[in-house]
Length: 171
Image (cartoon, rainbow, N blue to C red; front, side, top):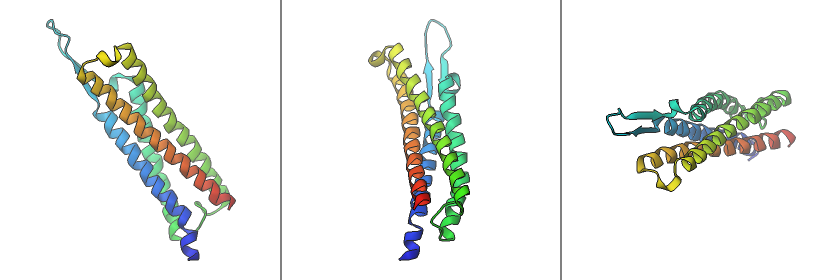
């Protein structure tokens, strides 16, 4: 029983890191797949719009990639703590503090990506007519909302990781 309680917090952190990775990867896939083709008629060629054409959506994609890479780098630390039956991730207080500070920075970074996605999508949708938009345009904005929402959930999971890490440090 003592060894299972010793690895309970690192196991929960590992589960949350895997959830964070899945949410960020899903956000990345959704924003990368978000495409829109506008046909203006009158002999003009159709205009294809993707995340590459919108700076805020590029930021969302970049933060999702950075967040995935960071989470992939953090998973071995947690796995080693579980394997060694350590309650504290990183082994020592100094390493654990450094990892917590890094988690805080990346959680804030992921939250800014979600905010940028939500903010631009809301403003653009409102500026272009809101509910009067054609179905394909609404779908384009809804996919951007979905990507930002997944990123926001990833930031919340990272906040839980931070709370658990701090709890294991003071325990």
